[in-house]
Amino acid sequence: MTVQPLSFRARLTLRWTAAFGLLLACANTAVYMGVRVYAERDLDANLRTLAATEIASSTDAGGALHLHEIPIEDLGGGEFTGKFVQYYAMDGTVVFGSSILRGRRVLDEAAFARARGNDHGVVAVDIDGRRGRLVTAHIRDASAPYIAAVGLFTDQLDALLGRLAAVLIAVWVFGLAFTAWLGSLLASRALGPIDEITARAARIATGDIDMRLDPPRTDDEIGRMTRLLNEMLDRLHRVIDGNRRFAADASHELRTPLTAMGGEIDVTLRRERTAAEYQETLQRLRGQIDGLAGMAEQLMVLVRAEEGSSDLRAEEVPLRPLVDAAYTRVEAEARSRGIALGHEGLDHLVAYGQPVLLARAIENVIANAVKYNRDGGSVLVRGHDEPAPDDAWQTGRLRLEVVDSGPGIPAAEWERVFDRFYRREPSRSRRTGGSGLGLALGRAIAVWHGGSLRIRTSSDAGTVFELAVPGQRQDA
Image (cartoon, rainbow, N blue to C red; front, side):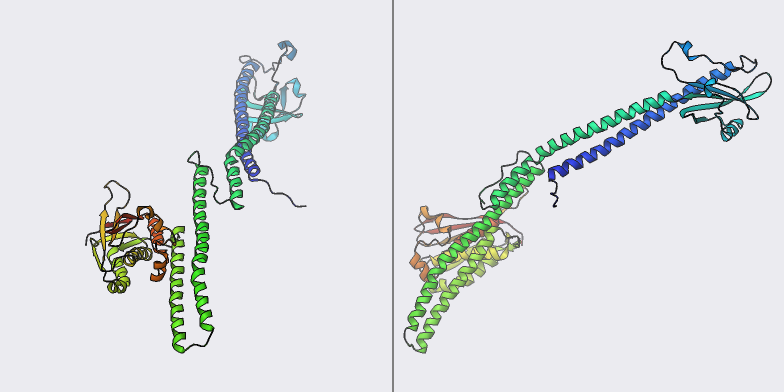
């Protein structure tokens, strides 16, 4: 038979109850022992007082030794602590004794020897099953010395301690039951948000990835866990959404060139061709394959940037070398079309970011400015720094303005140009090799750095793209 494991609520309640029960048991034990010790001390004090009175009256100011006994019935009833007295000669012979002892000797040889040696401590005794405590002392009448043993029965003390033990046990049982009920109630209330989170997580696990947990009401452990789970879900949603868009975009964008490549191969294979014709076909196919490889690479970088991949690390990156490298890559196209390239204000600007991603973003924006520029136009990159306030716990920001002399972009399309695969002139973009991913990737990289990429102004005289990232101007 399989034993079902206890729920976390039940385990928590049991542990709380066990811990409280152990603590209460220790406290009750300490109370019992404390009461017992102090009660015995009080009894011993009363015993010594009684012994002093008994010994003083036993010789009546120097007379012959005798014993005082008062019948209990003469005390008018009520509770009474039993007293017993026994006198010994120095040779150990019992001289007098209380009638309640019925001639039984209360001091054994060892106790008598200690008493004869003036060791008169309190001694615990047992007389026919009744517990008692006695104290010894030397006395002397007119003829010879004696040893007196005066004691009290502990019946009342034992009964009191028994009642106290019963009360403490009852308190322990009631406290344990109440603690178990209270612990279960508190555990249920404490775990209520966990149950809600579990229910929401179950719905999310079935595919409802757009669902989020309710915002926390307090900044406690549950609240922090809720926020972290929501952040995790946001990131998971971005990953899943990025993968979906990647699959959709890749299938959409790869279908057309692959179909074209397949058609060109089919046309080439319909008849025998010369080596030069085959070579020309392969060169065209090679160019299309290179374009597909570049697009796939940009898609992968875009997905990693949008996911906020943890393997990307930020560091100090000088911006001028990145701009110079980007100019080197577009220099051939710019020269062929007579486009002038320039920059200003980039010296000593250092960004805080991931070098490869920043280089890709800057190159994409510059390549876009060259590609959609007028023949004989210009591209200028200007750098600006915005220092953080002196009392701020954050870095400053750098702004790169990429100014081109192209035909301009209508205001209604300023945001659309950052969408994946958006092309204002699809035919021209395909002819020039554009994939429609450059600006989308640049913005995703900027956002990953905590910055932005936007169109600042655009008119018939040209367009100004602004890339903002964390950084500052450092002294040479």
